[in-house]
Image 1 (cartoon, rainbow, N blue to C red):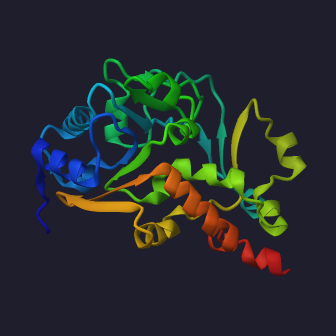
Image 2: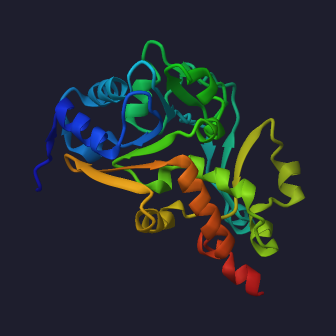
Length: 259
């Protein structure tokens, strides 16, 4: 077995500063604690260093998406219709429930001074002078000219990339794959169900272009590859690629377009 790296607070600070994180930075963080190896002090150490580096004038926001125990298995017919998941809704309280976006995020949302948004399934949590604004959605991080920090994870985890879809007119054969038929809305009313439908865009494909264009910085901290990019640059580049070849990001739509 490969021995895990031991990571200290000093190691984390050196890595974050090497990426350009600094006093006053506004940053959205996606993370995996286990990717680092063994972190002395665990998730709290990562959070302590993050807050120390951005300082009192900086702000940090993390996804704290809810773990919902009510996910229901799909039937073969539902899968054939294009449903990817379905969750029966129960009253939710994002202030107290666990999230599935990692140990660091779940520890962060419990911190004194952290504000958590009220979205029933996809809440954000933030701290700092911009916290109340940032928890409204990833569009606020974009408007504040913030950065995305990936701690041991990839762009596949970067929910903010959906913002690019607002600026692209997708071909009809893709839109059809992303639009639930009316009968689904009737069978699964929105006040009772959350329904996933259609192919999910493959954000990971943008990691190469981001590095080629020089908008993503990389370093290693312990066993983790850590990356940072300005969100505005990321969205602009993704829009460019999505307009050029949307079918590359929506797997399963090419055949539909050729029929």
